[in-house]
Length: 451
Image (cartoon, rainbow, N blue to C red):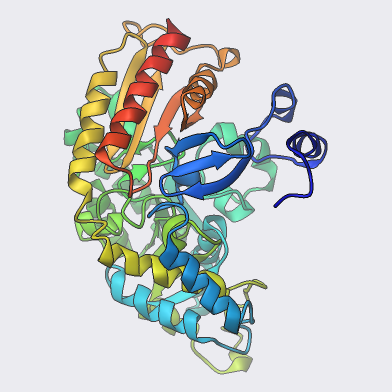
């Protein structure tokens, strides 16, 4: 299939390919793992070695690799139309998917604006929220409130509402000035509050901020129920609903970023459903196509849509769009993926898997170098520490989390770390036996690396 040998591919990678979130000096000291194909819940390298995909190919794949139904939907669409712009035109798969998403999403989210990544879905929500208030003559509502340790993508607007210093601090001079509320999980830790009892205290903190800044705040953006890239940091139960109530009371729009947590990751199709929250914007990406093609959608309400309605000369138009907005191949893949949720009974099959992850985490939590374990549905994080008694972290240069993931890889499992937190984000199609294997391999790897 390839016109180059394995060694040539490695050479070309090291000479020309700049990898995301990667220190390239470190990268060039080893050989890259070249993935050639996907088969069900496994990835296969160019040498034929199989690896369980424990991170859903960056939290995106839902039903497994090589699903005939999604492949066939893409193939059939390709026979008719590979791409056509949505600027001044439309096409069937974009309209069908918009209708389907309006049916599935919580609340009154009737309108879909497509893009290609989670970052752009967030960027669109930010721009829409900002312009909505400008169109209504509320010129003072220009700021955005978000959570510390939040992550919403890597474009400038998304970084501005992000809250992870490791990723975002260097870009400070480029960013607009937002308002940061406490990270729910860390706030409970720092104040010795059991997570189950933290909603009221945190709601009071958020209430004070919104009360102080409501007149100038356009929207509050958050990842519902759990902060993903912050290290799989769950919310106290009830907090999401309390924040929605505060936003309604103070006339602040609510942006729910479900790029990482949507499409079954927390146990329901959308995380907002679990606390009956109806946001003004819902940002979707990653799993929207089952992880097969790049697509994102920013869902919004009739209220927001009406704020842009008018004659052309009123200049209320949302002047935003991408070349590949609503690509027909990606929309067809998304429709096929949504069909698999029904035929595979994906959500109905999750509870025993979620319970098995909890059992595996409980076992890992007994290890002397495991300082904390966290879970929300099919999302889990295992935080490694040098000294559990004193909760002392490993030094940054030790790269313990990275070393554990490299050790896991030797045994045919792919995981990724966020610093010294090992993230488990398995495909929703993984079996109980495959989940057990991931935990066995991870437990042994932690023991091997940490001693």
